[in-house]
Amino acid sequence: MARTVMQSAHVRRLMTALLVVLGLAGCARDELFRQESYVFGTRVEVVVYGNDPALANEALAEVLREFDRLHRAYHAWEPSELTELNDAIEAGRHHQVSAELATMLADAKRLSALGDGLFEPAIGRLIELWGFHTDTFRPKLPADGAVRALVARRPRILDLVINGRTVNSSNRFVRIDLGGYAKGYALDQAARILRMKGIANALVNIGGNVLALGAKGDRPWRIGIQHPRDAGVLASLPLYDGEAVGTSGDYQRYFEIDGVRYSHLLDPRDGRPARGTQSLTVLVTRRPGAGTLSDAASKPLFIDGKDWPQLAARYDIAHVLRVDDQGAIEVSREMHRRLEYHNDVAPARIID
Image (cartoon, rainbow, N blue to C red; front, side):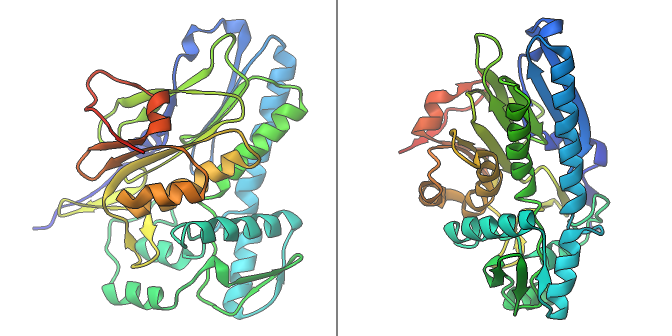
């Protein structure tokens, strides 16, 4: 008899934080200010290092308000500006969106093109078919015919025509889900707000998507890269001002049927969960949109599997760590120079 297992909500929330902030307990109590929330379907933590409690707490509260705004504005499955756009696309109508959403969609098109369409925000119908559009998804395989039919329709974000704030698509099977983009965008928004408030040193963690500002005293911020199969971490990684890290893993949202794992990371080419990789982490050095890029770029590199170096070069990302489906570790040389591996971790293969 087939046995079906689905990751529990509690375990999923814990494991979604792929990159765990390390070393915070060693800071003086009056120098470390932290607020947490649950947004974007995951745990969010914002930490400020400083000596002004009023300023820190004011900035932290504004960041969390911004996260809540983004969550409500661009949710793909609850009434939002994005669902209004998706409804218009399905009906074949032109639709006017906010200037912010128009900019996000144009940027997502650019990132998708760089990644050969493996970062594909237009496959919302496939996500729904697999049941990954809700936090209470059921472990059930969709009919092969239904998957093939949707893949044949080739929904792509490149199908969007963006003229100022007016958006339309001739492909009515396009349904935009910005779940692989919005957390990174939120990191960049958090950095903007914190800098505007005069905060020089902070760490923002949205379910494992992390961005650093400044440092933690005389030391850089340091995070741990989650082991994709165990509760511990593979290695620790220092982060410097303006750098961002994103990880895609097959353990974040998944279900198992008859011992086979099906994750939420779908390959747009066949409409099925990607195989061959357990997790893939990218570090994006300081640049405009570092947070957004760290979120979006980890997906196509994860899906591309062992051929990730070519896509990493297109995204101008030099720091990559991949764990393949057998648990073997591959790292770029630049990432290898940064990492401090844990003693029980097998040696990594360095990719030039």
